Length: 142
Image (cartoon, rainbow, N blue to C red; front, side):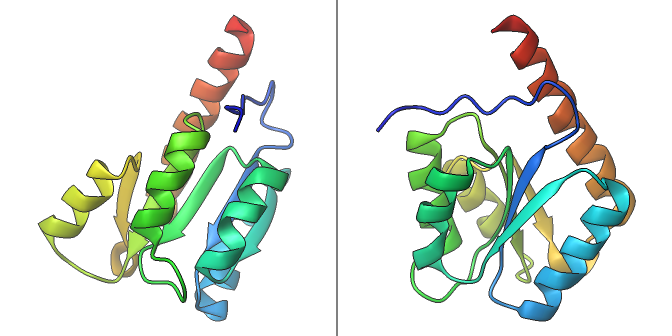
């Protein structure tokens, strides 16, 4: 499979995929992201089966990935996505509090790890802005 080049030239059209089995959490995160970044294009996946297909078709710049999903877990999916789409930024989200989850996320290639119960809108905003800045720099180099 060919490696994707996911680099927006501007913040407009920055594509994000939210992978989360809880509809209410997905909707809350989506609403928050759209309030912070009105031009962000957001798609959703609720289980492991949908993720790889959505990644290949949608080619997101950023993925919010829950660890526990119906079907394949988020860590395994992160590893697969990283192998075929190394430029996609992946933020692992979980309800679990533990260093072993952070280490596992890092070993699978996640760019960042966030505990759902400490999700902070300011932290999310600055993290996404840093990813957007890196994507813009990459686009200018290519």
